[in-house]
Length: 315
Image (cartoon, rainbow, N blue to C red; front, side):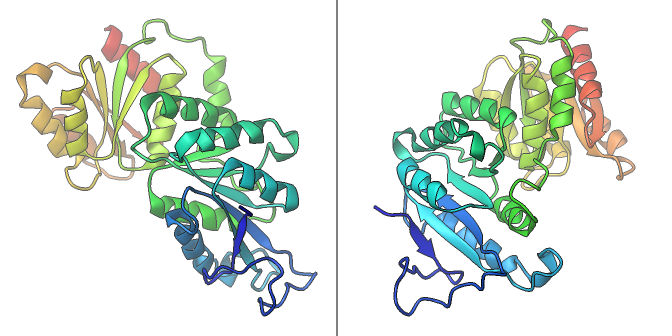
């Protein structure tokens, strides 16, 4: 079917329908957001409309009192391609686990069009994704403006940021390209290639940044969003060589999770590096008291992180 256009209140408005909202005056440019998901007007569309409501005049560039935000829905890569051919968009919101590989098909088509190379894609990183799919998407995220977001709240915040930008692509990606380039310039460490590190952190930005640094050195990365899931992931996966443990998390924080792991004889000697906030004095001592082997502070320095991981994995 045709791509469906939604008004800002979330009620479908067929293109060109009589009685539709008055057209936007020519001097005020419409900000369009393309939402690609399996179900018409599904969860991601609701998140997009919620972000639109958050787009207050204070967010908008100088001189824009309240620009129209138009949410355009597509349920397949073909519908999405037709929408992109017809209009310009500030960003795309993409459901990754659409059936039939539609998300990857859309990203392939996007990569094949140089005119769309700077179009930001905000992808909801569903935990149901298979490992192979996730790895392919993470590789792709490192090479284009694709942001993998596991939290719907963070997705909404990023939508607001992108719609507030003067031009599409003005918002900095979650991982700075200079940092990635700096890491790629370093020779890969053969001692780390093939090792497995479990990253436990409830912030998708930290997960993505830490994973990116480690994977550039050939490290296999497992993820968990809180201490309880971290322990479950550890016990379900043989061969975890090291844990990066954020200390501030819901459910079970990093201190409690570290202490619980240390009470398990099989993991008494497993290196655990705590990730602490630089602004919180006492985090280092508390982490070490709970059983952490070492600590790094946020924002994590990539070179320091790799040096510490190398120290604990190669002695």
